[in-house]
Amino acid sequence: SGQHPRRVLCLMSDTGGGHRASAQALKDCFELIHGNDFVVHIVDLWSSCSPWPFNKMPEGYFFLVKNPWLWRLNFRCSEPRFIHEVMFKGYSAIVANHFAREFDKIDPNLIVSVHPLMQHVPLTILRRMKNHSAVPTVPFATVVTDLTRCHATWFHKDVDKCFVATDLVAKQAFRLGLRLEQVVCHGLPIRPSFSAPSRSKRDVRAKLGLDVEAPTVMLVGGGEGMGKLKETAVALSQTLSSSHQVVVICGRNAKLNEFLREQSWPLKMVVKGFVNNMAEYMAACDCVISKAGPGTIAEALICGVPIVLNGCIPCQEEGNIPFVIDNQVGAYSEIPQTIAQTVAGWLAPENATQLSMMSSRARALGRPDATFDIVRDLVEMIETRKN
Ligand code: UDP
Image (cartoon, rainbow, N blue to C red; front, side, top):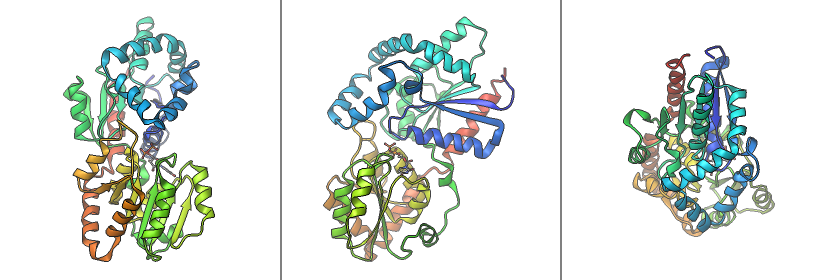
């Protein structure tokens, strides 16, 4: 299996939390650097290779996170090792054949998981497959896509490498029994477009058809357009002046997109659906209002854009709030009026120095090379395990 192209199997599941974005970032980066030498297969084993009810897991996730206390219960109760290990044993028995068939089909030179539920079951099944045949060991890496507080199932002692985004997560990995040589801290995998040399705000705004002069706020709620975006857009329009500009990125929230487009606004309100050039939109803005999603936070830091957090998914995103506050790169409030006032304060000419200091601190925390560093290490894992 040392032939070209080498195959990378990237395990993910479409349950928010930037898993798909991270998988795509790794794939894009592999293609950018190595062209046709590597093929990255992104596979959602739960949806595409599992029988019911496991193929409904992503939908279950969206139901749970919309009911925060249910999600919290689910998160906390599944953390202890003796519980999730029993659960995973059960899953493994049921999905084993489906997963094994997928592994056989792709015959990967490397497996990378970007999902907390993609360590135990795949590793168990791989171990079993190895015992039954002469299949050589496939190196296995986890890329953790949370910034601060991670679910315990992210960390499995049998992985070859575990890539984390912050020292905080590295500490959690060590606490849960991973060894020093397994854990590598490069930052969150972000699409390569965020590492392109930055152009001036004016240039990017002109390219995007935005007002080039107006102080500009981005309002976004992750890929799904979650949170009180409607109320916040209204509060911003009432608090900011007519010389300001607001860019609302609705993501896949079509209802919100439609609603916002139908209104008439007292300031420049630019409403977008799902955009594929987030790096440009970030670079065009002076600050961003977002839920505490790891992807959006990491991207804003790279672009040096201060952040107002307006909410979070319970548990795994909660720690991102003190992360932003303690590093003095943003603020937190769930109240649209308060958020609008915070932003108005940041954009006031007399606070320009303060905003630019926040922006510099953000840029210093950003890890624009993370994806490149991770991909380099992944390639090394394949090269050193030639069969
Ligand atoms: N995103 C995008 N286009 C959109 C809205 C969002 O590319 O129109 C991307 C955003 O840049 C980020 C990801 O979607 O990379 C959202 O990740 P985050 O962790 O912030 O939240 P999630 O939606 O995964 O819960």
